[in-house]
Structure formats: C-alpha cells, structure tokens
Image 1 (spheres, rainbow, N blue to C red):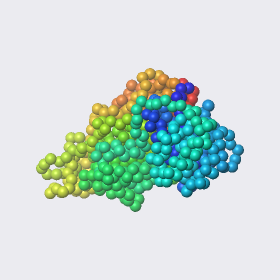
Image 2 (cartoon, one colour):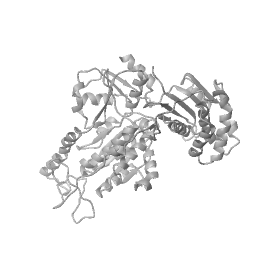
Image 3 (cartoon, helix red, strand yellow):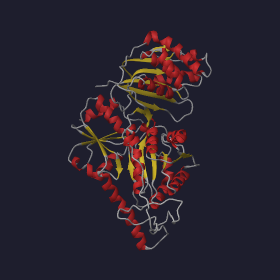
Image 4 (cartoon, rainbow, N blue to C red):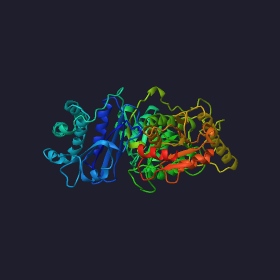
Length: 551
C-alpha cells in the first residue's frame, strides 16, 4: 500500500464550523505549495446533524480524499464515535474534553475556552484550525495571518482564541507531522466553481437557477461574480420558469446556462424538449445526488445517467458530457457551451455531488478554453430553420428587419407552424442531420481520457474517475483506465479495440447504468462491476482492495 498523503479530518455538529475548518486547512496546505483534495460530508439538517470535512494533501497530484486520517479533531462526542475507527496508523485523535463521554486521545477544552468570547459555539471550528496548525508545525504568526484572512468577522477574537488553543496543544502534539514543501502555489476551487468559470470563459452571458443541492453553489458563485464578468444572474420562482426563461434568452442571442439536480431537472424536462424543437442552444448543469424523489439530498450518486441520456420527449440531439476531475470540469463546461451553440441543441454537463462540492488544487491554462461562436446569417432572406447540408441553420438575433421566429410547434423553414406531412418529414430529417454532423466533429476532438499504458482494463466515468485513479496510486496497481468524456453521442469509434478484453466497470449506481450503456453502445461486457450506492464516494484504500481482489 502506497499512501503518501497526509489527511486531516474535523467533525462536529452542524453550525460548529467543520466545513469552514476544512477549507482553512486546505489553505494551510496550498500555502506550502502542496496538492490538495477536500471533501465535505453534511446531513440535510440546519442544526444538530453531524458534519465533517476531510482534507488530503500530498507533494504529488492527489485526486480523492482518504477516510483514514492522520489527524482527527472531534468537536463533539458524536464525531468521536463516528470517526474513532478512521484513525490512520500512528495518527493523533483529538477530542473536545468539555463534552461528556468516554473518549481516548488528546483532550482539549475547546468549549470552556470559547465561553470567554462572543458566539462561543462558532469558535470551535477555529480551534480545529489551531490544532492542525500546531500539529504540522505552523508558527502562531503564520497561523494567525491565515485565520485573520479566513475569519474576518471578529478577527481579533478568533486570533486570540486560536492562540490560546495552540498554546494548550503544542506541548503535546506540536510539529508531530512535518510536511515537505510543495513545488508551487496553486489555486483550489470546487467543482461547481470550475463549472461556473468554464462557462464564463466560453462567453456565458446569463445564468438562471433555482437552488437545489448540490447545484445551488453554481447560482451563488455566479451571483457573487456577476459584476466581475458582466453576467446577468436570475433566480426565478421555480425550475419550470428557469428553463423557459433561459430558452427565451437564447432567442435574443444570450449564451445561457441553467443548473439543478435530479428533482429540479425533472421539472425542466418539458422545457428541455422545447429547446430540442426550437433548436435552442441551452446548457444544463445537472449535478446528481442520491434519489429517487428527495432521496438523500446532500449525498452523491450516479443514478441519473439514464435520465440525462433520455431527457425530454421526442427525437432530437442531446449532447451529454461528464468531467472526470474538477480541472476537467472547467474545460469541459466551456467545450459544452461551444458545442450547444455550434449545433443549436440542448446539452447537459453531468456531474455529481462528489465533484460539485469537493475542492481540489488545479492548474488551468486559460489559453486552452473553448469559445462559443455560432454560425451567423450573412445576407438574403432569413429562414430560422433553413435546411442546410449539416442541419445547422445560420442564426440571426434582434434587432433586425428580418422576421425571426423560434417555435415549439413543428414548423417549416421560416418557423411557421405546420402539420403538412412533407414539412414534418423535412424538419425531422434536418434535425437528424445534426447527429451525424456532431459525430464527425467529435471524431476530431478528445472524447475519452486514457490513464495508464498497460495492465487490466477499467472503465469508469464522471467523478468516480478521481477515486479510481487515487485507488490505483495508493494500491500500487498498474492498470488502464478508460473514461468517456462524452456520453451522448457515445464515442464508440474510440472503443472498438477493447471489445475482446476483460473489463472492470466502476460506478456509483446500483443498477450499473454506465456498465449497461457501455454494453449497449459498444458490445463491451464488464466481467466485474464494482459499484457503491450508499451516498458516499469510494474511499481509495477500500477501492484498491476491491480491485486487487478482482485481479
């Protein structure tokens, strides 16, 4: 087992700041030039539920968190009970000595010290930051600079509290974990931030969203950045309004995106079909969580794959793509915005809570970003649905002396409603041409990622790719990992050479939806399906053991 990562875990009641503590811990590690992956686990309760953050860091590229932690800070007894078996060999368990119950490890009076400050309950997470700083040998001065920046409200009180906790714990755990310096400073962003920034970089004008975990933070981030990037960000009354307003904005030439999770996107389905008929270039960010119905709102799953591939009624081109990492989420979202405008059809950037809300250090090259540039009408009579050789009609936007007609009804080339059999045939065939056109176009693009050069063959997709790659690293397993970036159209032309090989599929789905898609589209049959469907992503150590058992 090769696990050279250092992992910090902090847990406590909702409202005690465990998530923020994890984010500040990530800042500690990025300030040393290290690679970082942060995962946040929280229940769908405003108060009382158990929340925890896991931050793994290394000198090498790291693509998933580890549940076996070197340092665990428990702000309450429930956290201790939950994580007492998550301590790595030679790790340190720290607990709040002011709470009742039998606990082992290093006791710290987090609550009693916090009572000397305003809002003492909110101070506990700052204590977790201080404990980490002492354990990895940060000086108080360096710690306080980061605390002052990350906790600006009540800055002096936070620094004072952190200093007192640091002085208490340093004699016992000070400098126990000596982390080497990394190679360079990198930004750390969440998957939803990467999706947002990729869309912005590709020319996004308008974002419509109605909050639904785990897609909500796209709306929040877009709104916060609207002035910086000249965005219009709108929060309508429900998801039906979201999709219809978004489609309307494309009629005026605005590059538009919407975001939701399964339940919200279900309400958008009729509008998604409207986009198919109107040939409206709308991009939907669909971030999967455990379902069906309300399901487990704050946990992850890949159970909406079939839903995304078949969304909407009727026949029309749907482009569906799924990023493997937070960094790829940036590039792929930009690419998807370019594709929906190039082919004038709706598309879905499909991801999961694991990618959406986790944070990861990234190296992003802005020069490699796609730019959405549609085919424009250049003169003569304008026909919105002009039947071209590839099915893609030139666009024209107001203001214009030409009549511009988009419609939800079947129509002729001008957009005039029709029930004529020949006209219906013509438009069906026109839209179908795009299916062939996009395949020819994608054949010139990167549609699959291949990791590794030899060894057994593993197929996976989406954020599970991050877990698989980390499992291979920590398990010292040599294998080839194939990850289709595009799921519709499925890149069958890239996969013909793998039909005769033994295949392992890995996904977060009870029914093996990705494994079935692979079989249906390519004839590649997975001899083994490693799947998880309890709302949690794969832990690299556990997954590496499963892979070894299969091999």
